Image (tube, rainbow, N blue to C red; front, side, top):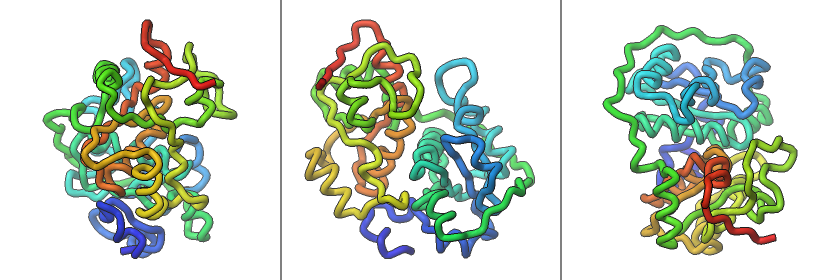
Length: 288
């Protein structure tokens, strides 16, 4: 284990590039690449890695929601994943979408999952092997999960509204200008139909990338404790909701709080600002 990981609350939730390079063909693991840019996989990926497209594979194509239990079982079935398979996620953008895919897998109870620290960028920076060969694995008979757990790690609009009213801690992980209301989208990204800018009243601003080093790895436990405990004042006993635009950046912060710092009660509001900023009579706070 990387000595850096020993300080985290759940060091088993991470692997480093050196370990993965030595275990590319180890039995019982499946490497999954999940990116914001869905074309990156075809330009070269870690040998043996399969591609999970967050738009096509994780989300229902009609309802704004995730796939159901049968859809999740089918996804695992065609990628050669069993309930005993350890799934190692990595991707671009310092593992934004890798953490998002990890979070969705947790909704279905697949807890044998890890994040590759540093993701795609670190693997490439170290000149480790890439391939364009798409692996084909024997299909599995992944049992349909009895349910999708939308209670323990996911927050809906109504729950977030009550959370706000109770003045419980929330963290907005978008950019400062999105938080202030100066803009309704990330810099250099298209506007996605949000009608109001600003943030949920009472939420604290802490952009997701604050937790990442320039090479895409997570910061040390001491640095993270200062960010979320010292600067934001969060305590282990807090009930925390994280949100962003559609839940992707906040899944990164959710992972940091829950797995690296050991906060037991953290939920991701995946409706996030594209829902909150468009909801009739929703309160919005601005700081511009």
